[in-house]
Image (cartoon, rainbow, N blue to C red; front, side, top):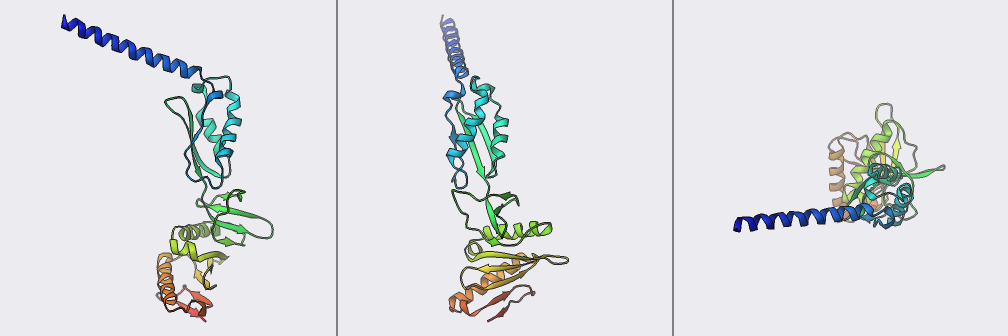
Length: 242
């Protein structure tokens, strides 16, 4: 008898679970995107606002307004968002409760180009991006027209500056000097107003290490304003002009 009672309990539990699952699935299928709640989890919304992303999604969801959420093409929504010049990547998903979620990765500017004809950013991947009405990035500025190998090198140098706390605070400008074999760079500083003759990107880690040691010394003895140029092009030494 106990055995039959166990079978009945198990069968009843299974029926209840199937019923609840079916009911939830049916209710979720009946929901259309009119009652979608969009969730954003993209960290600091500096260059593209939550409102902007929400508006872009709502515009694109118009094609699905009379359909269930399960019929929404999430890949199409991701592609639509990623065509925005401020967005590096977008992941769209449906939660278990049937809500639409969006994870947005914004582009990360590392250099600002500002010349007589146009102004724009380069992001960390070397892709052009426009200025934002919401936020102005604190990145080095160059007035040079960048193309070819110079593009790759200046983006590499800009990323190096961005990823170093000291350089990020001290370097405010980059000048590109095109060479026959390798492009050369000069850096403009925030404190001391020196011109740093960086040269090409060979021995880049060594040059930065030397520069930090040098600044550490001249800041300690308060002689930072005595120097006009700091030349890092020479191996194992720094040549300065006062």
